[in-house]
Image (tube, rainbow, N blue to C red):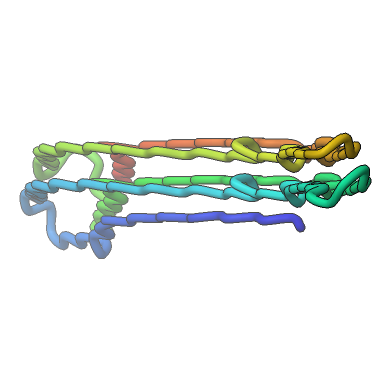
Length: 195
């Protein structure tokens, strides 16, 4: 069995300032203040392990009580099974876009020397990412069966007891693949001024 677990977390905190227009050579002032706190806690686990295929147990007991009597007993335990796990693939992708500003300032007066243009950007961001990604195909058990034998004879008789435990099985695990990807785009500013 293949188990694939994927978590995608995308946080986008964007601001777009509309074009600021000025006529007649007046001053233009644009002020943007961004304050953001982003916390991502992501746990991703894929697990195909923890399988058990144990063999059966065997118990043999022979008793001979009569004069010159014989007893014979055989027991065989079952063999352990086969464990064939699929792939365990776990993926965590976290992408944060925080405090991205796109500012356009346009003066349509056609007067290059008139008016002041002032753009002030203040960005404050705290980004915390806690990402745990795990993939596991292990902790599989294939034990052989247990065997117990006991023989008892009296008055010249014979007793024979034979018990064989089963053999252990086979374990064939798949691929365990864990991938974590964290991308932070913080305090990205684009300012365009056109007179």
